[in-house]
Length: 293
Picture 1 (tube, rainbow, N blue to C red):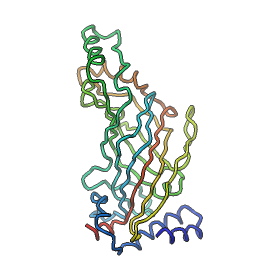
Picture 2 (cartoon, one colour; picture 1 turned 135 degrees about the vertical axis):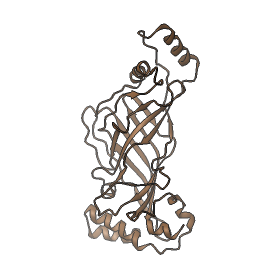
Picture 3 (spheres, rainbow, N blue to C red; picture 1 turned 60 degrees about the vertical axis):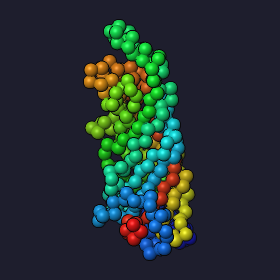
């Protein structure tokens, strides 16, 4: 697959030509004898959907997301999976995974947790004491979990070519801590954090400056019917982030939300936030997955 892909790439210098070669090789490799185990990562690919063209299983294994004045390193693997429509259809919406787990809800530790938050002096004395005692003596650890709240998009041409948005994710971030309650979020379905990630170079507003990603390195399995992409780097530093809401529950959120926002530096305008995601992924045709249940 890769040798044929390289030959095509030498004859076609356009991004469309390169992606067409990838798609063609995946289609031609349907009848390989690969072990069914190699296709197990595609078990949630919605192959019953007639629009499913390719199946994708993408792992973010590293990187960092900085929102406001808080940077959260990615230590736990985040999975993005589903089906890509025909890349020539013009529809980049990712068909969701069969079980709905298109973007895994993987908690990441927020460095420092709630340490440093002090109850505002305007609060009632009893609440100041309760809050400060909890922070000083209780569990202060916080995790941040990114949740998909809209339709993900995979722009295959742009991802491989390193030009424009490669992956688009409308998300919210859930802050998890006993004191913050179960409904503390940054972003929402109606006002998501919109990540337009690229493997190319960004063009953010100041004070951020351009950063550059990478499409990674392509390889294939022995039967040439699974395409692997290792070492990709997706970047985005032009997005904005709203303030936190729902922290502390219905009765306390009007008091807790401002304290959390002060600690995290929210809301945060475009040009003050950065996402860098590194990882690996596998792609094959939906037909290959049907043949290797």
